[in-house]
Length: 297
Ligand code: ADP
Image (cartoon, rainbow, N blue to C red; front, side):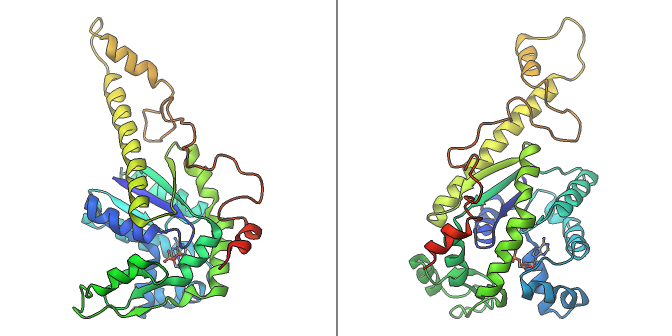
C-alpha cells in the first residue's frame, strides 16, 4: 500500500501514520522528521533547512526531493509506504508522480485529514515530543497523560517531553498560512486523479484511525476491481468471452489501462458524507480564520 496523508499542521498525520505503520507493517516517511534529524545532526542539508523551518516556511523543493529520492530507494519501501508531510506543494506532487512512475510504484490513495482551524491551533500548542523516543503526546488530552505514564521505549525512564521549536504561536500561524496557500491545492490535484479520500480527523485518535482504515479499504476494493477489470480486458481468442468479462470491461471503459491513473466510472465517486463538498468562500475548515479565531481557547 502506497499512500499519502495530506492535512494541515496538527491534523494528526504523524500520529495516524505511526498507528498505520504498526498495523500495515510499512514505513512512515515524514519529511518533517527527516529534516529535523538533519538539523539535529548538523549536516549541510540541516543547516540549509533550519531557517525556513524556524520561520514556518517550506524548505526548498530540491532539498526535500533529495531526501525523498534517497528514502524511497531503501528496500523497506518495496512493500509500500506512508508519506507524511510530503508532497506539500504542486511542484513536489508532480516530482513525486514522476519518481513513482520511474519506480513503477504508483500511489494507491491520498487521504486528506480534515480538522477545524481552532482545533488545529489547540492541538499544536499542546503538542509535546519525547526527546528520547520521538513519540508524540498532547498535554491537553487525558489519554496522553495515561500514555505518558508508560516508560520510554528508548530510555526505559519516563518520557522527556519537549516542545518543538516551530510550535510557537507566530510560527504556527505562518505554517497554517503556507498550508492554505501551497498545500491545499493538492486536494484538487489528487481528486482529479481519482486518488483522494477525505476523512473527518476530529474526535478520538482511535476513531480517526478507524475512519482512515475504512477509507483505505474502500480504495483497496476499488483497486482490486480495477485490476480484475484490466485482466478481463487482456486479449483473448475470439468467441471465448464470457458475460461477466464483458460486463467488467463495460464498467471500466473510461479507466486508463496505462500507467497514468484516471478516475474510472466507478472511482468517480460522490463525496463522502464526512467530506465537505463545496464550501462557501472563507468557510474552509482550516481556512476560515474569522470563525477559527472565535473558537480559539
Ligand atoms: P507540520 O506538518 O506539523 O507542520 P512537519 O513535521 O511535517 O510539521 O514539518 C515541519 C517543517 O519542516 C515544516 O514547517 C517545513 O518547514 C519543513 N517541511 C516538512 N516537510 C516539508 C516539505 N515536504 N517541503 C518543504 N518543507 C517541509
